[in-house]
Amino acid sequence: MKVWDAIDFLNTLVDDSDPDLDLDQTQHLLQTSEAIRNDGHEDWFILTGFLHDLGKVLCLFGEPQWAVVGDTFPVGCKFSDSIVYPEFFNDNLDIHNEKYNSKLGIYKENCGLENVKMSWGHDEYLFQILKPHLPLPALYMIRYHSFYSQHRENAYDFLLNDQDHEMFEWVKKFNQYDLYSKAPEPPNTKELKPYYQDLISKYLPEYINF
Ligand SMILES: [Fe+2]
Ligand SMILES: [Fe+2]
Image (cartoon, rainbow, N blue to C red; front, side):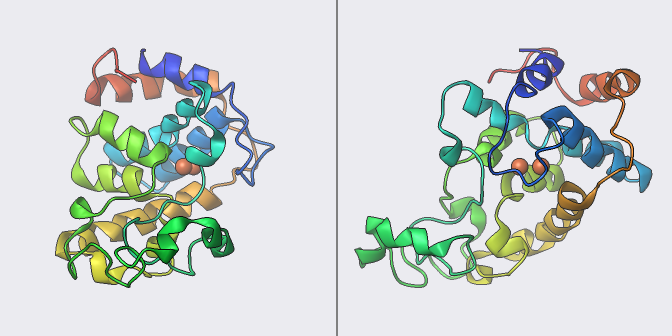
């Protein structure tokens, strides 16, 4: 698909986990990216804001929403109480498995997130798609933007390496725009489209494999 066709396709989705149900998907993406743009950030950061939830097209391909949206978290070690609705892990067999239910589980201290398996979601999916095309801070923002227990609560510091710590400053910076960029006027998609088309063609190929 061309990126803009994917954006239009995504716009047919209603995300049940989204607190901003009054905004459609394209408006949420544009509010995020326009807020980043207004603060004078670099263009790859603006593009990242615009694309960050594009992985939610998985829902439209038939994946259930619980497997696509919501918090992401490491698997293979103890689930943190900082993950939203931790009581639901009581039904997860991993909490009874000695290999997986200790603090470190299958990991070594500070092994780096590159070596950590995360729960699946729209973040990891889009990261895999955009990996060859965007700079490292952008890839961290996309891959870990739903990893709230870390970027908000620092609950998994013991898994992060130095590069992760450095890059999570970007993830935190990004989160402000994802959650709190409410413009009084909804963004005008038609007016903004040429600017974003240019940005897309600067960084991405014409067609993307989803
Ligand atoms: Fe998201
Ligand atoms: Fe978002």
